[in-house]
Image 1 (cartoon, rainbow, N blue to C red):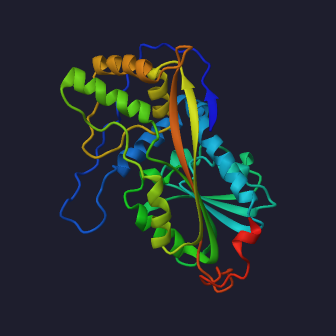
Image 2 (cartoon, rainbow, N blue to C red):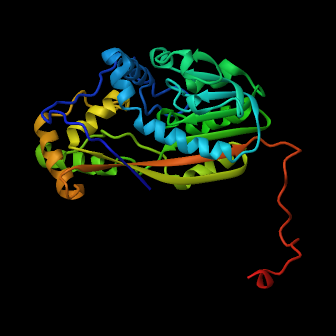
Image 3 (cartoon, rainbow, N blue to C red):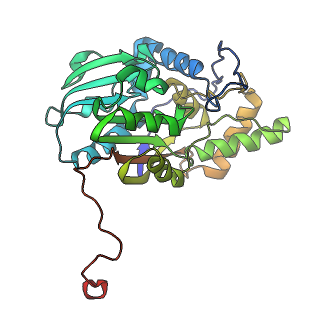
Length: 329
């Protein structure tokens, strides 16, 4: 568990509103995955976040993705293999790509649906050669093709994908035999403090609740999803990043600057100010720190999986062991 601090002073009397969307309504009679997230609205949110104050606001809130990218890199360094090319799926401006040195890869292909965010930082930021592709992450195979990638990484982008089992299958299909998938995504306990505070405030002030925090995958499901997608030699573990904020207002402002505002279909266009005021008081009462700040928990699920290959090591058959565990213990 790690703790990060937000120590700057900001005005607490700020309003927050979700970005409205001009996307067409969902076709509920169509065949395909159920549409939970408005991908068009999410791209607009991330575009706007990348351009606020010339991108400086976006860089100010890189702390979460930079921290998770650093922990992902620790896992990559444990894999004793050098790649010619790595595909960074949902790369944003390249939080993970910036950490990749020439001892790990010669080139990184950054793929993201937000062209503005994708090109936020100059090429001189990266140690390795980079190629940037603006495309929808949900249509991965239309962009890269099957059996084309040595390794695919993803740092905090898969929680906005409508068809998570489908994109995992696409990632596996895009990999060459014995190819690596390394990813990190937000887990179901992320921002539980904010979720409970907003729900209690809405019940108190408005007599009901509406979704303001995205539904996220339970950690127990990821191993099953990776296995069903066809990955082998799985490693799934969880971690938490706790960030301290002066109040709920700074937390929600930072989420907006991250491009992480609500993007659920059917969301309310705004949160009433009196509801937010009540949520702020509830947040501090239920979860507040002794110094008056509030914590925000981000649960991170880390995943490692390999595309099957005849050259991979295989586990021994059950019952074939020749060493008695009693002797070892």
